[in-house]
Image (tube, rainbow, N blue to C red; front, side, top):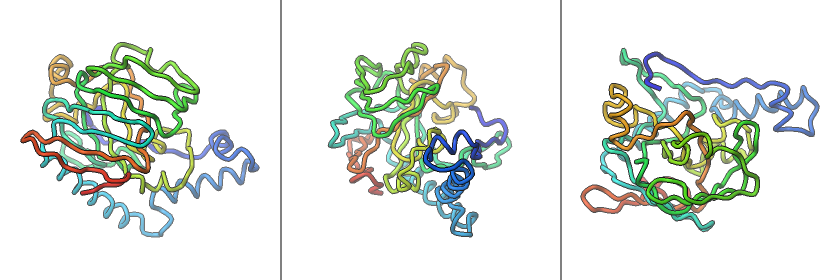
Length: 272
């Protein structure tokens, strides 16, 4: 999590995964269809993936730069499904995008696909209710139709049509360590597919992550001790699990340190 070396997560279709997504197809057809779907959402199909990715990364970097310039102290989510959530940000929180940098300064892509601009919430400054908008797979369990209520950063009430044990892992699992903004125009969302794989599914919608914060999402965080990170409001936990909460009509505003309010998302997509 400190990005000392370049690393990457990649996914290759297996028979079991392909049949999970396309249960009505013969195995060989399901594998082929999953390969095509991966190529589509990873900007390979058009034939110029390097050019496409460079343009995509430039756009994400521009957005993260603007987000950092706002000097936000909190963001507010609302959706017609009942979501009304305010997320305060950790001390020194930094908005990051797709590219990471190792200790030698080399830029690399740890996740492909990636559509998010993300930061560190303050573990004790999250309040309100949020509704899940995509099913989530945790330890083989499909969690659907969930909602979570926060007070002072901690989950105080939750429910789901299909439940899992995510929040019972440890104390930090009832707080969040990441806030990520992903527009509804994401290729993964447009595909309409549930991948049963967080690498893909988290990039379909705005999401929050229960559990550990990424040290790099606070200024100089990779050089700080666990105690120093906690003092900034960075959550600590044995897990880091993303759940999708963005909808087609999600509205997001940000409160700047100087008191201004800025529109970040309008009807599910970036307003910047």
